[in-house]
Image (tube, rainbow, N blue to C red; front, side):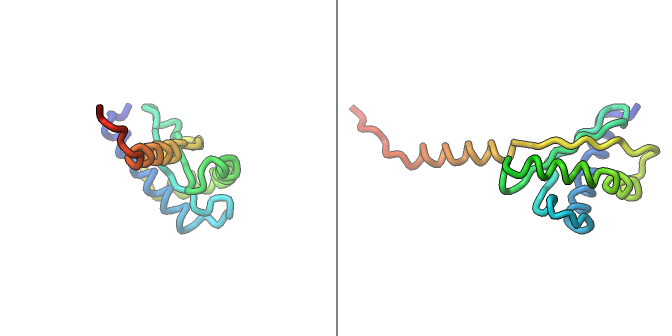
Length: 121
């Protein structure tokens, strides 16, 4: 069984390669401006959970996930040629709400900074 550091290196490499594939080789319009936020590989290298997001937010989640599932076989085969592993993990796709949540928090903090300070008394 691979060590944690090796698993993390594999996950990072898969994230980089998937991002490159989405940018350069996938022509599905559902996957336009979709980005890979994280990849988590289990210890047995059987499954890789791929987390995706879009600039437009959750409104594109169903469409993007459908596109990723449709392209899943192609992505897995392409990854197998780019990442040297005995067996390529099965890809499971998930929507990542983290960028949207971070944007929401930033807006709240900006509003708080812009509010006038109450009089000190």
